[in-house]
Length: 111
Image 1 (cartoon, rainbow, N blue to C red):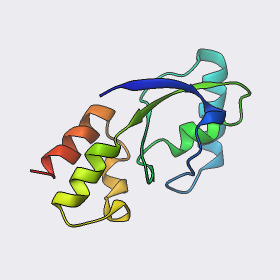
Image 2 (cartoon, rainbow, N blue to C red; image 1 turned 180 degrees about the vertical axis):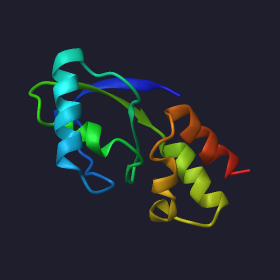
Image 3 (cartoon, rainbow, N blue to C red; image 1 turned 90 degrees about the vertical axis):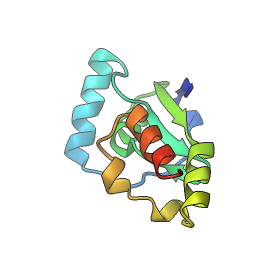
């Protein structure tokens, strides 16, 4: 699992869920004050898995760096082994998970 730091303007994915503007504003203010703290924005080749609010907040700050985690291989293996596709993943279940828990969820579901 390799977490990568990139500038938010280099990250081209859309949000996975509806954005709460108040939550985004709170996160943005925290990011301005404290920098990027917390979990990486988790994605695969098909789109985001988690991090819509963090991504929306970071996009409001010029030249801001975010932490990202690409789980393309884990998602593809999960989908292949469970005869499903990206849109079938229970995003509401993984929304509050850490990056490590998401990897565990995907790999256990692939066994």
